[in-house]
Length: 227
Image (cartoon, rainbow, N blue to C red):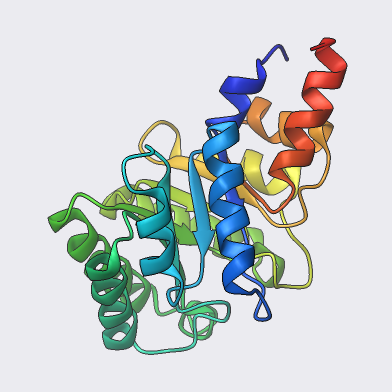
């Protein structure tokens, strides 16, 4: 598909979720995000305040990963973490569902959790993304969470944390898009290292790409375009 570097950049969530990331790493992350016009920096909650200061007035969003990467904390903990991240300057939330409750067939829990986080975020005009962590789910389970999302209406459903046994796949993006249609957007994330992979996910319906290789993807597209 035909896409410009600027348009691709505006779809990239520029990511550093490493536990050993330094403060200087976040300075570089924010500088790269501003230079290339990335949609967002995707970070853990602790550096949110630092990145909010660095990105103030830039138009680049600050995304906090909630219940990350396992999703194995209570709804109350995720809501508290969400509120704290918003207070510190985040304007996008990516949270991990409770896979244990999904595996138990407890969709009412999944819906209560999603509704609680979406309600808190929406009250502050903050974007929400629901991380399925598809590597651990059956297609039936993926469809079930997608159906919950269509009812609750977070802004995005998302394939992966990048910390599971595998990341985004084309089949998963296609399935998620088929399930949510135009009601919810789809974010592909996890292991996206090449331009061709990113473009295939976009062609399948993803409107955000989560990757730590955003600078590389833009360079690949510029080289391909002769820029």
